[in-house]
Image 1 (cartoon, rainbow, N blue to C red):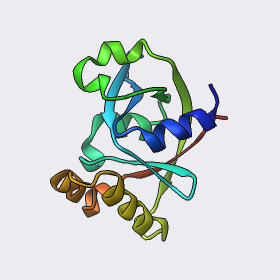
Image 2 (cartoon, rainbow, N blue to C red; image 1 turned 90 degrees about the horizontal axis):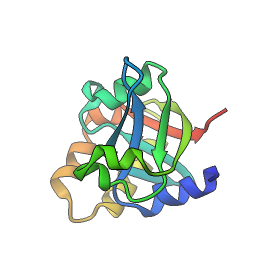
Image 3 (tube, helix red, strand yellow; image 1 turned 180 degrees about the vertical axis):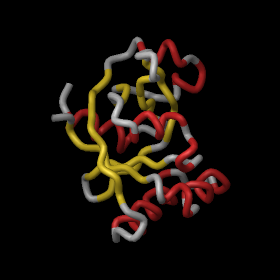
Length: 137
């Protein structure tokens, strides 16, 4: 798979599975939301910096996304790890970056009807944990 295929998954799939690595080297899949703005994919941690998947990414451990419906990770994290995945890198997006407002708008559009969850993704804590997804080197 290539990054264009991953971009399509992140854009068209409601729930994606991010695969991170624990300190012991074990991979784990976590269901999260993703947004694509102007052809660029982003993710946010609804729990802010306390989410362990976000801490794994910030610590420089490997990160990938499952190439398919990530909602499987809501039911069976192990099954999600059996699916193909694409390794990526991330870039921190500052809270005051102009793209943050566009990401907020995309959250409202893509997840219309999920008001409480969307509102949680619009908090300062969540916005301060926004990552741009880029191709792995």
